[in-house]
Image 1 (cartoon, helix red, strand yellow):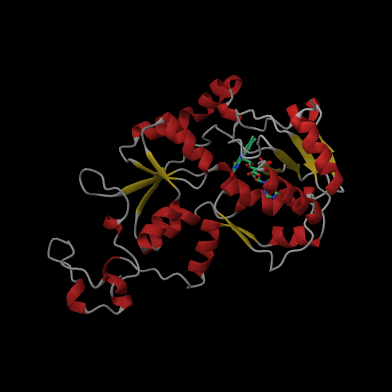
Image 2: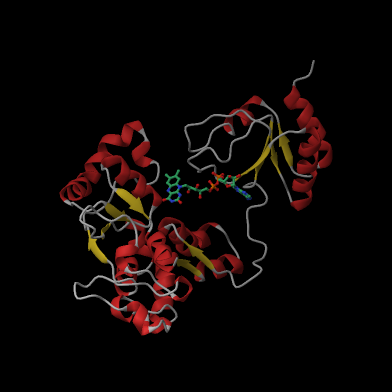
Length: 310
Ligand SMILES: Cc1cc2nc3c(=O)[nH]c(=O)nc-3n(C[C@H](O)[C@H](O)[C@H](O)COP(=O)(O)OP(=O)(O)OC[C@H]3O[C@@H](n4cnc5c(N)ncnc54)[C@H](O)[C@@H]3O)c2cc1C
């Protein structure tokens, strides 16, 4: 009896113009990515164009076979693995054909912003790749730009409700500095600093900030700190303790763990010394490392900003 993978490959070879592989070498090669997982596919298809993809997906739907697209296979969570058909997009469908809009990308991961802005054009040719590269912004830098242009209003403390035209009587402070009553919720633009995030036991909310290395290369290193200070009136203390040492999956590998930990030692010490529980950082890998080496609560600064506006 013929193996299922060969049958699938034979069927697909009749409907696609691109390449179809069902040999053991290809199946094993596409069974892993940068994650710890291993899933053996039935076959691998390198589509030439959209027509190939549509044909394969129709076949897969009819036969209830899973499909997944794969780029460089650098995903760290096994996203490009599947037990059915893997599309290898790198062989033929490896360039930007057209960009529908102005190519703008606002990216919340500093490393991804850096990749789109500075590295993409070295790997993907064409004017559209240039367009994307020229119009990519790291999220907090983008928001800080809006703020500098006066499009995000600095509303804080005593001036907060005035700019929202709330009735004066509903937003006065008591002699102790505590707020007496709130204006109607729909009239409020920003929350008061003490309403944002998880307060410490003494009721005071402070944040420490860790600067991801990649952010230094994509714009204003201070964008998040300045935004949260100036726009939300939050107290932000910068850790200034250097690299977290994780570097993507580098520090997750057993052979690199010791070196990664040594690089993170300064940061670990700074976190241990700080009584403040709330850490802000833009990078998801830094967040993972900080949570690994400390008991802090780590969030992207935009979440705090979003809470302030909620
Ligand atoms: C050393 C290292 C460091 C890293 N550092 C960072 C980091 O700092 N920040 C960060 O955000 N990530 C980081 N990553 C993760 C990695 O960069 C991303 O996951 C990567 O961009 C995924 O791209 P890829 O082409 O390898 O996609 P793959 O891993 O091949 O696929 C990822 C997902 O995208 C889908 N996909 C791929 N191509 C297509 C396509 N053409 N059409 C539709 N769907 C598609 C796949 O189905 C899958 O779900 C790191 C990874 C490594 C190995």
